[in-house]
Amino acid sequence: MVDFVNLCTFAPFFQYSIMSLNFITAQEAASFINHNDNIGFSGFTPAGAPKVIAQAIAEKSQAERQAGREFKVGVFTGASTGDSLDGVLARAEAVKFRTPYQSNPDLRSGINKGNIPYFDLHLSQLAQELRYGYYGKINTVIIEAAGVNEKGEILLTTGVGITPTAARMADKIIVELNSRHPSFINGLHDLYEPADPPHRREIPIYKPSDRIGQTLLKVDPSKIVGVVKTQLPDEVKAFSEPDETTKRIGDRVAGFLISEMRAGRIPASFLPLQSGVGNIANAVLGSLGASPEIPAFEMFTEVIQDSVIEMMQSGDVKFASGCSLTITSSALDSIYENWDFFKHRLVLRPQEISNSPELARRMGLITINTALEADLFGNVNSTHVLGTKMMNGIGGSGDFTRNSYLSIFTCPSTAKDGKISALVPMVSHTDHNEHSVKILITEQGVADLRGKSPMQKAQTIIENCAHPDYKQLLTDYLKQTNGGNTPHNLGNCFNMHREFLDSGDMRNTKW
Image 1 (cartoon, one colour):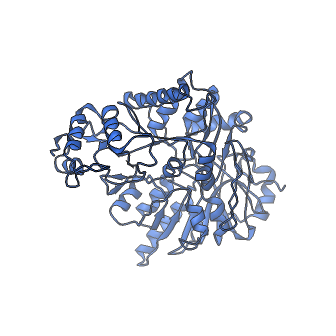
Image 2 (cartoon, one colour; image 1 turned 120 degrees about the vertical axis):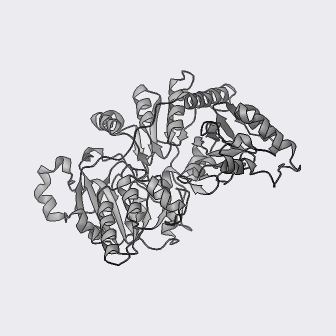
Image 3 (tube, rainbow, N blue to C red; image 1 turned 180 degrees about the horizontal axis):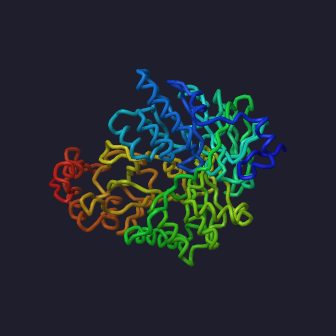
């Protein structure tokens, strides 16, 4: 194989790299981008996302606007990114549209003001729908890499996302060669694209550690128009330590899974786990790791976070397959310093594989995701505050929930110092309907919704998951409904939301 050019081992390959690759500045890279272009970016969350070229594109957009010319680009990514991508483009008003997921406050503000068109999408669907031609062409893809050579072989870094599909479809490829990541990580990735219908076969993964693809991204070398040197770390922030509420939620999840094992509904060897990302997910993983009754398990998930790395080191997680290493710099340093330990325990895949409904169903995943709100009948809103304001997006939660062995949603029972109840008569926006949600867990308790009628679900949720301040209010709502299989009063079902908008406190709701 041709040697890689990597800035960590740059000296031995210096002459080779200069002759073979076109090294350019970020500003020169931006010169390849035109108004109305569609750009694909590597990575998944801030992990593996480009960090310097987007800034140059934002500067170009501002300069063009000052000259009286419009300059905006369409943005396709794996998921959210760092502020140096989503943030700078949003503040420069350079975004023509954005999909499939975001978490940057400036981008979110632009979306909710109606200034940035955004369409939310299941993460497993984007790559294939790009191939299907649903969203137009990709003019340029910008890829963060740990290595690249003149044969068009690219070694990705800490996130994969839609990179294989975007790179194959794009007219031009620009590489950000990042010295933060060593070339010895070759082998971390498993890159595979399914064939499109009607030629698609099964994805031959039967356990999280199976590998079916290539370790390197192979592209047409003639499409690589330039390489920009960088050394910036991923913009991943540490999660807060579990507080009393998140710790209780984590312990409730662990206790429930133990009870399922004792009942024989989960094998004694356990099942692969998918976990969302965030403070609650971190607390849940901590409780699972602390329980002596839960055996070491494997993970088939999208985001691998610090707690997973810690659980590998303690022996509580045997293997993790994901789309990104969304971890702090100190955790990443630990992986690189102990690569011989981690290289057989980690794999990163494209998101249409890491989030594949087929694989979730086949492997029997236990899925644990976070709700913004849930209603009395088990419908879950995970994206829209009060039904209208986009928070982040559905992400991969739908990919996993609908196809899981056992789907669990967690949330605190209240928010805003008790002024908002996470349990309401009817969700203000539905992302996961009652047919997909099996278990609901708050710090108050566990609602097992399996095999229950709508009214039985409502009674179970009120009894086990609602905060005491809201139990009677929710019970009274059921008493004034109009009957039917799913009892609702369509005139009052959003009164709690209306009351919060009027008085700032759902506890003041009147039926």
